[in-house]
Length: 219
Image (cartoon, rainbow, N blue to C red; front, side, top):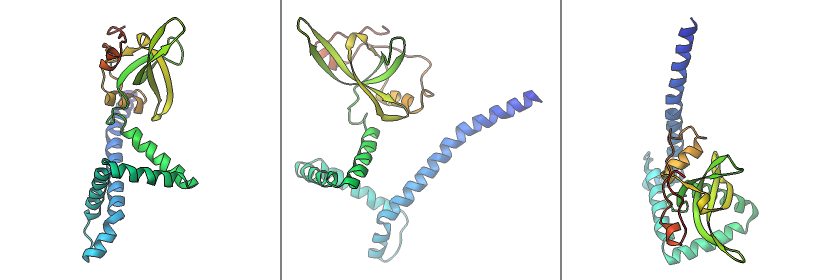
């Protein structure tokens, strides 16, 4: 009986693991479709004289595309800058706009190449390793020497935008043979999506072109 119950429990857990993400995705897509369609759909229905399901989603997509086109030229950038200044001048609007922008930017970090390389470093103390993302390189000038440093963002799961920014000597970093998206999956899944093995590699061209010495693979 115990073996039977254990088998049922294992299959139930396996079913939950498969079913919950699928259901959550369907519900999220349905919620997104309904809200996007309701954004411009009623207005378009009034103009054409009838309601067409999905037309509001298409109109919203085209509106976002046109906004993106405008935002990538000089005049559009100036206009958006003025709009942001106006938003940030109103207390309540400033908080809502700032939070929304932070969320969207955090979701597009890898696409905007803000995060350059995936590393592991001893943080917050010796013997404890954290995942991090190199954002830039710099040089620290002392009285009698200089040292190459990597600015590393250490995310705090499960929200990628929370965490710490630390400057670490390049030789103290282990550069991982892993893409930004793969590393973000590990952070967002609280380590569940971690691969069984982590392989090191030499640092990327950004550090080498700046005169830094990369740590050897697997160090």
